[in-house]
Length: 329
Ligand code: NAD
Ligand code: UDP
Image (cartoon, rainbow, N blue to C red; front, side, top):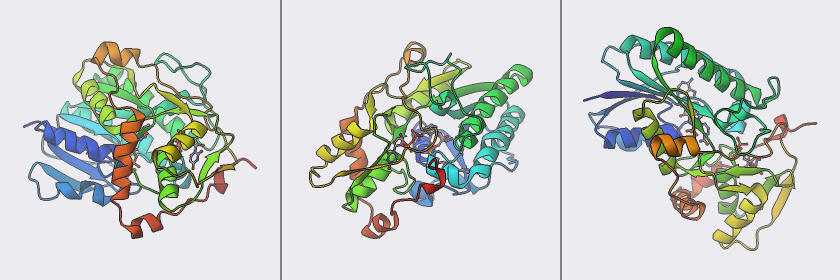
């Protein structure tokens, strides 16, 4: 039986990857320190003999005797609210954590896939974003702790490929959503859903004209799985090219949930908030024969079902976060 090591396994994407690899017949070893994850996300896996969880901070080296065949390095805070609260840990897991996982992959002669992000494109001057665009990142702005850690991660990964011949894959993930996101992680979809569940107005930052392109988790996991099993070295965008402004998305969600009485409150736009974001997925289409299958309406329905299953206590606890620390004075 082949063995996969997944870092960030108690997080949103990591826990779905664990489910997928177990379903494909792999044995899964999962690492997490719960800094932004939730033990509940992997609760259903406890007691299985093909799943093992180790509580560990991957910015510290990790050793394991059993042979590892694949490494999926997904540990990292991913929400701007999270990584602005824990900037140093974010930089460490993207740099030291990646170094540790590349070292582990080298020792085990394992294939490693690292989770990169559309944030490597920064506030993009090219639209939609293709893998050969180098980006427009502010290296000293508040978001740089995440963006630059991920750019360093990509560079280190390619160095291990070129210098040590480690078998590497890089996925550039665009905004992904679905069940098991934390209601209070601050990302726009759980933020809006939390507000709706608590009967509050939706907070749109800026005038809401900035765009995002939202990919449902099952499509994302399929893309990652196909990329890992492909023989392509180099970054590949995985995301849904259906682009929408944040204001239109807020209105769409109010419609979808029949909440005509709730309003939209406009708040200041956080510094360096990208104005546009949309993946060009021609490479993934050609290489992996992959494209998203689940549209926003269906994806949001499934996501809302999940959040409706939370207890009133869990919903209450997830009150809106204070963004003042990173709003431009
Ligand atoms: P998440 O916060 O839900 O999950 C991240 C997990 O990593 C958490 O369980 C957290 O506890 C764990 N973690 C963080 N630092 C750690 C450390 N030092 N040691 C051990 N575990 C640690 O976020 P997510 O949305 O699931 O994102 C997963 C990965 O995908 C991240 O690398 C993120 O950068 C990348 N990504 C996600 C998106 C998205 O839209 N969800 C977009 C681009 C990139
Ligand atoms: N956003 C918003 N209201 C919120 C949370 C986020 O208008 O309550 C906006 C945010 O400014 C950004 C977009 O939604 O333009 C997506 O934000 P998110 O934090 O999900 O991730 P990003 O794509 O910026 O990394």
